[in-house]
Image (cartoon, rainbow, N blue to C red; front, top):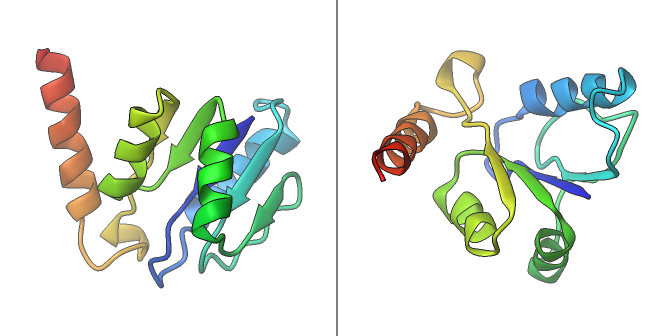
Amino acid sequence: MIFVTVGTHEQPFNRLIKKLDEMVENKLIQDEMFAQIGYSTYEPKHYKWSKFLSSEEMNHYMEEATTVICHGGPATFMKSLSLGKKTIVVPRQKKYDEHVNDHQLVFAQEVRKKAMAS
C-alpha cells in the first residue's frame, strides 16, 4: 500500500495530488493508495483520500504502507524513514505557490547530499 501525505500547510499541493491521480488512472501506479491531501483543492478520482487525519490515523497509514510519498517536511519523511519505509520526498516549491519559500527543497537536497556521501 502507498500512503501519501502532504501535511497541514495552508497552501494546496495540487501538483502532487493531481500527478498521482494521473499515474493511477494510466496504471503507472497499480498499488492500493490512500492520501491525506490537506488543503489541496484538487480531489483525486482514482484513489481514496481524506483532507486531514488524526495522529492515530496517520500512524496507522504510516505503519501499514510499504511506500510513503510525502512533502518535504522533515518530521514526516524522517518518521517514514525511521519506520523503514521506502520514502519518496516531493518538496513543496514556492514557484508553484505551494509554500512561502523553498526551505523544503533546500532541506531535501542537503539530506540527499549527506546520504550520497555515506
